[in-house]
Image (cartoon, rainbow, N blue to C red; front, side):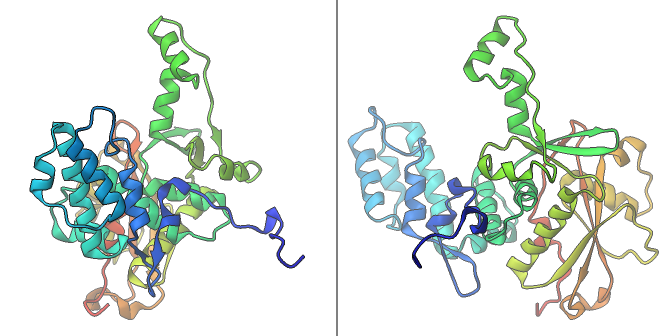
Amino acid sequence: MDNLPPPMAARRPDFWQNSGFGLLARDPQGHLTITDDFLRAYLARPEIAPVEESCAKERALHASLLAEPKRAVSADDIAVLEDPDGRENYEVLIDFRDRLIAADTIEGCYLNVFREGDVRIAPIFLDQMTQVIMRAVIDGTDDPFHARAAELFFREQTVTVHEGAILSGDFETVEMLASTGGMGAIGELLVEGGIKPRQVDLDVMQTENAHKYWQRDERHDMVIDLSFTRPGLDALARVMEGWVLHFTGAEVSIQPVQKITDEKWVWHIGLDVESSAILNDLYNDKDVDEDQLERLLTLFRMDFKDPSLMQPDIVGRPVYLGLAMNEKKRLRMKPQNLLVSLPLAAEA
């Protein structure tokens, strides 16, 4: 009887299984170390896995990497592949793999990309690293709002402002449903034939239905409300706190605010391109037109629990954060800004 699994209500949800989190190990700091199985998952991707037309040398390279995923691969090993698309795919993958191996952890590789100041890595790899790191950050959570809010870190959103509510839906999912009505290939055929398929409405996460997220975590079809005082906005603040703690060890408190009234405002971080520009202009007393201000969705105040970790010239002062959509009502968060723009003391 002692070996029986705990009841379902007591189990922590195992979400985002396709992220590869379960294939990674942790180092003493809790960061994600690269394993052979994690690298093998990339070899199974359709861009890399051999097809019927693959040449013998491509098959041999693939087989050798499956056997030894960290083995050295030279430019000559790739140049002999007959398929030009295959050569390009291997060049991109091996460059990424070598970055991972050199850094030893996903977190180290992620930070190195931005420390180099030359982001040439494929965007899909950045998003995948962000997702698997965030999966580690919120590992053990049983709050679906936290998991859905964390998706903003690695998936573009489309925003609808309706009767004061700020509703954020997954951009790719919304676009797909808009073109197919949720009917897949049949929906596409209907559209091509001039027939508008039935409208499919996405569920807005609320306390009553949020539990459904765990059965739909990789469908990205639930909308999160980022309005002030809503649980979705609080969840975003909590996962941002976890992101900072995971990378830096600094405990911070992040709280939504409706406006910045601080006469001694000294530091801010835009969480996307649009909010960075808006906050910079506001900080420098430049005129910001009404259209721009309406794109600023929310503001946050960040406080360090240990002010000694901050730069000496701003110790004890709050850091303000902004999140905005662009003119097309799309939101593309840049979570690296929370790290590279953080006012940490040099020794921290």
